[in-house]
Image 1 (cartoon, one colour):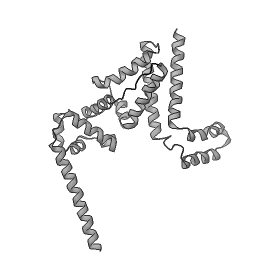
Image 2 (cartoon, rainbow, N blue to C red):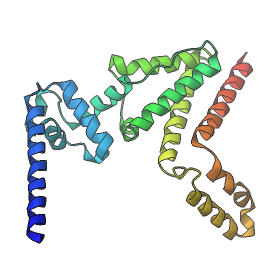
Image 3 (cartoon, rainbow, N blue to C red):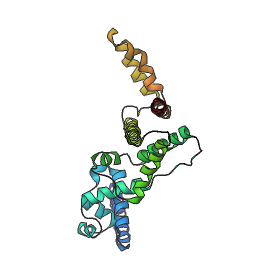
Image 4 (tube, rainbow, N blue to C red):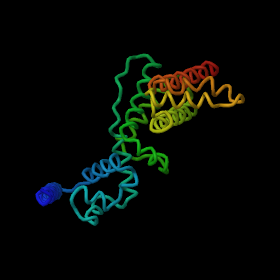
Length: 241
C-alpha cells in the first residue's frame, strides 16, 4: 500500500508538470505584444503582490525568455507604468443622474472599487513621478475634475479637491486591508470589548468609542467620510460666492 501511494503521488506530480508545460507551450505560441505583457504583469501583481513583478516572472507567465520582453517594454519601470495605465483605463464610469452630490459619490465609489480590485497598485501610484501620459488613463482624471469643477470651485481649488478626495479614497482602501479588515465578526467585536475593559481612566474617550470601531460597516464608514468631504467642499463654494 505504501509503495502504491508513492507511485500515485509521483504520477500526480508528473501530470501536474505536464499540464504546466502544456500551458506554457500554449502561451508561448500566442503572438507576444505589449498588451499581453502588461496584462500578464497585472495578473502577477494582483496574485502575488508588487514584489512578485519582475521581468523574469512576467516572462515565465507568458511562456518566453525574459529578453523577449524587451521588444515590447523598455524595462521594469516601463512595465510598471504600463500596469498603472491599464488599471486607469479599466475605470468604469458611473452613469450620471444629474444630481451633483450623488454623481460625486458615484465617482468616488467607482474609484474605490477599482482600488479594491487592484490594491497593490496604490504603491505604484504613490511612487509615480510626473503626470500620466496615456489618453485612456487620463479619462478618469478628466471625469473627476469635471465633477469637482461643476460644484463651482475655482480651477486651483478643483485641483486641491481632486487630491483630497483621491487621498481619502486610497487611504480608506488601505484601512480596509488592515485596521478595519476584521469587520463585525464575533472575534473582532470581542477583541475591542476586551481592549475597552482593560483601559485605565485616562482613556475615557477611547473606551466610549471603542465599540463603534468594530461595529461600523466599511461601506457606512466610507459614505460618512464622503459626506464630510462633500459638505466641506459645498461650504467652501458658498463662502466664495
